[in-house]
Each structure stands twice: as C-alpha cells, then as structure tokens.
Length: 323
Image: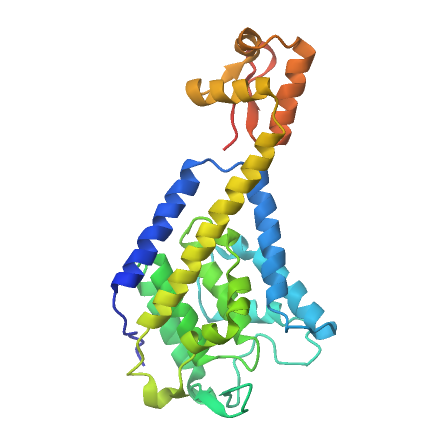
C-alpha cells in the first residue's frame, strides 16, 4: 500500500514558493529582535488556538479545544527531535483531545467507519478508508515523509496535511491533528518563521474553500489513484505566502512603534552600531552631549526594547545589535 501522490510543480506553485523564500530572506536579513519575535509568537498562538473553536460557541467543549490547542502550539519545538511516527501522531491527538467532554477516544486510531457531510444538505460528500485499513494508510504516509527528506518542506507539508485528512485516522479532531502535525513536520525541518504564521485563522476564515481544496469528493478507494494534489498545494502555498506577507508588515509595524520611542541620541547610537558593528561608552560620549548617567539610561532602554545587547564587563563593556 505504497503512497505515491500525484502532483506537478505548476507555474503558480513555483511562483508561490519563490515569493515565500524571498520573504523569508528579507526577514532573516532584518535581525528580528527576540522581544518582538516572542510577542508576535504569543499573539499568533492565541489567535490560532481560538480559531479551532466553533463559531459563536462558548461552552466547556470550546474552552477545552482552545486550551489544548494552545498548549500543543507552545510545545511544538519539544517534538523536533522525535520521529514523526504512529506514536507521535497518537500522542498529538491524545493531547488535543485531553479531557474532552464528549468522551471521544483520544490517541486511538478509529475502529469504526467515518464520513464527511455537507453541512447544509447533510449528505455524505466524502468517505475515508475503512477503519480496517486506516493504520496501514497512515503508516504509508509517514513512510513517505521519512524517505523524502530532501523534498521542499512546504510541498511535503502540504502533501502530508491533505493525505492525513483524507485518511482521517481518528473519530474526531482530525483537522486539529493535521494542523499541529504539519507544524511539527516543518519544525523538524527547521523551516523558518512558520510558528509566526496565523494559518489556523486563515483556514477558519476561508473554511468552506479550505475544505473544498483539502477534502476530495467520493469514496477514497474509488478516487485515490486519480487524486491530483496540485490544486491543494497551490492553495496551501498561496495561504502561506499571504501569511508571510502579513507577518512582514506586522514586524515592520512593531519595529516602527519601537522607533517612535527613541530619542535622537539613541538613533545616533543605533546608526553607529549598524555602521561599525558595536559601540562602547567612550565612542557614544563622542557623538552625544549626554551625561554618563543619561547614557546608561539610553543603553538600558534600548536593551529593554530588544534592540541592543550588552557585551563584556566593566571598562570592556560594549553594545551590539540584538540578534
């Protein structure tokens, strides 16, 4: 039961990938300060966690989903060194459905049939593989991710995401599991800045279109050899590109906010560091008329803003840009 997805590197897919990596290059070149990175990550985790809850719902089940998803997002990097295998898949699902009030089996591959319905007509639109074959199909997908280490991370992540949902190995929570496992897969490949993207929020915003792209129509056994992953990969990378562009604007905005708080002497200090790589107190005293005590305040404020960091000790103290 070897998994061999069919797709092509279309012009649209190629363009999306090129623009994504171009934006990543911009972000890497801007040496994003840790406080800004941390602040954005916290905001994104909160936003993404609330995106997995049903619209206009407020109950124990909703709170449980949000809390568990938020914890999973925060802990993603702890799984970077683990193999993406059945054990990790089941552990992820177990954590996402921990203490769920509906008593859905958490962390256990389903042992009964499942299907996807049209929410408006209640008609079945897609039937995943039989529960008797689920584990075999899942192992085949995981083997595919293992042997394709050199594939572009986003293409591999997109393929994994779609195929995981087509298999739907659990009774409930497959979408949440697919999204977290996709993030783990990219974290394991050191894909930069993905943890700062509000993708779950975009899936929620474009819920109908998202499911049209990621879920097929019909019975899996009848359509699996005809499935073309290309439209989904184009859509997936388009969302990723859009979120990277939003991230870049967000970062620029936060940096601008920081800059508004700087005085003219602090701006001189930063320009000096950018030009010469570092600055010490003697050098700073030569480009400003500020007293020693005021210069110390300038250093401390810039450190608190996450713009510079202190190196050395006593008279050997100097300052560099925060990386």
